[in-house]
Image 1: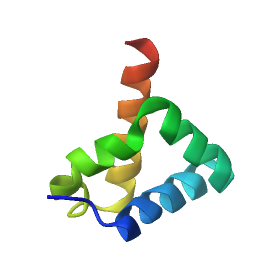
Image 2: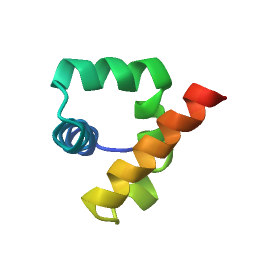
Image 3: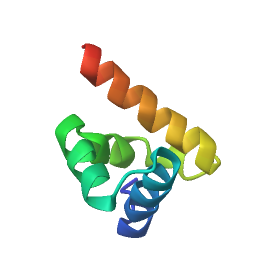
Length: 68
């Protein structure tokens, strides 16, 4: 299932607000670690859970890419 653009924008917004970052910084971070690909791949699960779990999932994905 392909993630709609609105959901990807939602993920940027909730992450931005949670981490107190600018939208540009979040987009650059997401681009650096391939987060948008993660969102597309995991859309089926991500769009059914709450914002806090989505933020945590994205954070864990980024952490795994930083250390891996």
